[in-house]
Image (cartoon, rainbow, N blue to C red; front, side):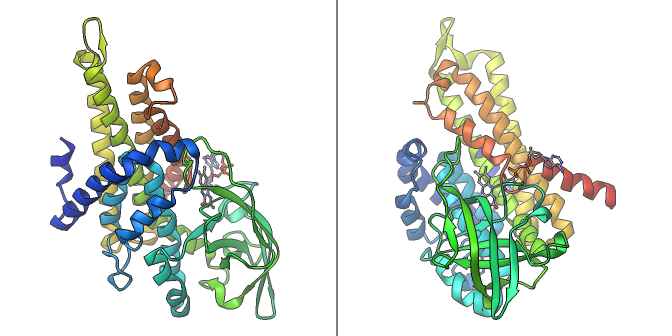
Length: 386
Ligand SMILES: Cc1cc2nc3c(=O)[nH]c(=O)nc-3n(C[C@H](O)[C@H](O)[C@H](O)COP(=O)(O)OP(=O)(O)OC[C@H]3O[C@@H](n4cnc5c(N)ncnc54)[C@H](O)[C@@H]3O)c2cc1C
């Protein structure tokens, strides 16, 4: 059913991409998905495969080898996320810094970092969240003090995903601590910079294949040519990068929901109770029908938001559209994964069964890139202020 509906609004090229990634996910990624989660090990083999398929530039302009389409990127992430949350994540952790440099970087910075990110030769991460809180971005306290030729960073970050592997990290810091939003600037901090340390990775319940780590800045000098965008304009730069990537996080929610539904459907089709397949009970079919409807509604919202980015929507107009896609699709992922888990009964509780991974990963999706309460704040603000 979803195959037919998927063709709605997708071009020939999108459908070709969808078929290719679907086949790749089933043949190459699926055999590794459970192992990556269980071992909580960075899947270098999956990274190599994505590099071979030249997917790291997918959302970006053709000069970098991309398709210049967030919608195409959503289609790819959905198919990967249906099978393996962590492999889909490998693309997104690369795409967010790419988008930030593309939007805010000068030509020299673009020339230095974007070709490497596009080919996969360079890896990156974003560091905004601090121990004192992630939702209140304007409240960060990491300090960047202007000195001769650059800035000196002092402070700490938490949960910076991919930073343990990254060649450079995009770091938000206060250049003017007397201000909130207007005091934030963004810096590109390279791996071996003196005074920059990556701490031990978190032991997470979900999203286990891509490490999230604390970062420490102890008198870390960053040359002025590595400031991204103008001084004091970091908040807008980060928010716009998040706005553009939120449909993609939504796509990961859609893929997760679809994958959980696939597993549940297959399970109830063969599981017997009261002398018949569990999937033949009307109550169970209604659950599956609700899961399918919710997933499809999320898919359409995500595609619409992605197409809006491709059509050039940005800033305040994009914010609520992107927030709706991220919030609805990831809430749907949690709801559908919970119902799928329920349909597995005790088999779902066993850690040998894949459905419990979907359940754990779905929770993470509701928290990253702005929690779903924060998405609702963005939508509510738009409703009340227009
Ligand atoms: C797996 C994972 C990967 C991550 N990767 C990164 C990364 O790469 N880079 C990075 O910078 N950060 C990353 N984060 C951090 C993430 O962005 C933050 O966890 C998130 O923004 C929430 O911040 P917090 O956890 O400090 O929660 P808090 O901000 O402390 O919020 C606690 C609770 O209060 C709610 N809340 C807060 N303010 C409001 C409000 N105004 N209205 C209603 N409710 C509110 C929140 O929704 C949440 O439920 C990652 C987190 C996880 C779990």
